[in-house]
Image (cartoon, rainbow, N blue to C red; front, side, top):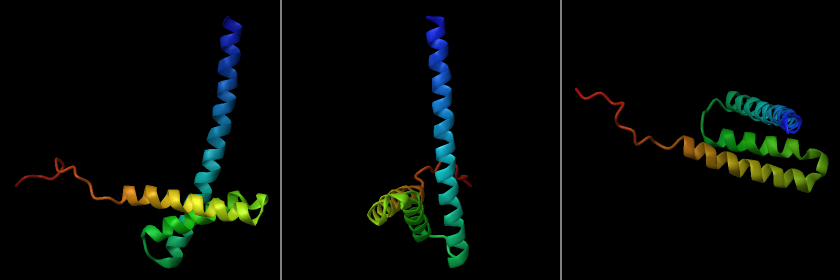
Length: 100
């Protein structure tokens, strides 16, 4: 029983490390492209995230062909737009405002 649990945790650690590397790779591509686009456009708006999402999705799916790259571009752009729009929503938390 002990050996089985030990082996299970070992496999889980390998899987977690692999997932972390993949997430870091995707995040690095997205953040780098968003930063480059924002610097090029000299604006900070929703379009930067959408363009960076499209680039990231297309780049990750490039080896599967142009159709997969287009689907990856559209999917990542839509997800990026949804998350960015949510993060840009005004906060309803008024407790932080001082009352004078």
